[in-house]
Length: 331
Image (tube, rainbow, N blue to C red):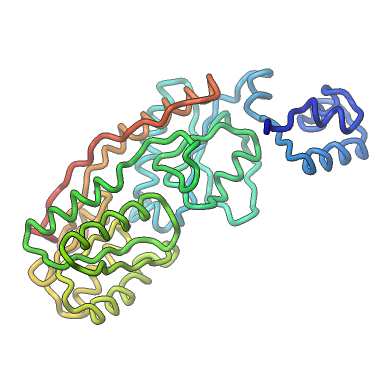
């Protein structure tokens, strides 16, 4: 079934397409009762104005948005330089070279809106299942692409992070260093990177006749939640001799958990995380991590978004292969 159009709204409301357009754009006066009726009919038939198309008719704003539903305390990291902020810095450069401005949009609560700026397009960083940021931009008719696949949305163009391959790279490394029982700690929020890591870890364990040991934690809790939770995990599973903890805030919590239990890293417990950010580099001992080539990822995402903005469609692309950076937490 095709999506309702402005013509459908005008026909049902008994007004012209121009009146419907003015009701949404506020460029011309529309009787308040007529405006109210137009909005009610649009809601009833499922019409959403294409804000990007409106900008194309009047001239684009020249602004694209970068957003994530990850809590800022986790995504920003120490000194306000973390996974999201590093992507933002690279995306800003990629945008500026294309004569575009980049706007950072704060995480939205369920049902909340951010109407201060309606961008020409938006890049979502690792959207979660039912992501409110995705719903928000789509409701505004804004073209969207993502860094990392969106759960349940194979139609959304993305830069595929190859999370299964990343997980396998880390697991193989930990095993090569002598680990025999490796646990996995991810987030309770359902993001494709977590889902793919969990599936790859389960397959890795099954191939070795092991029951996978996995834990999911709430991203909002960060390091302070991770420490006691991982203490309990290690007490419950004393045979664990390694952990892959993709979220770097959880990984530093794992370092603290090991210290609290008197387990030496890496002699008693090998640790690795995904993002090679400040948390990984400043941990004691420094954490084995991966170079995800964020500068390239950001440039790919901006290019993908421009393609979608220009043509209405775009094919997903694959991120460059991550490179393992072995550090004293695992070797």
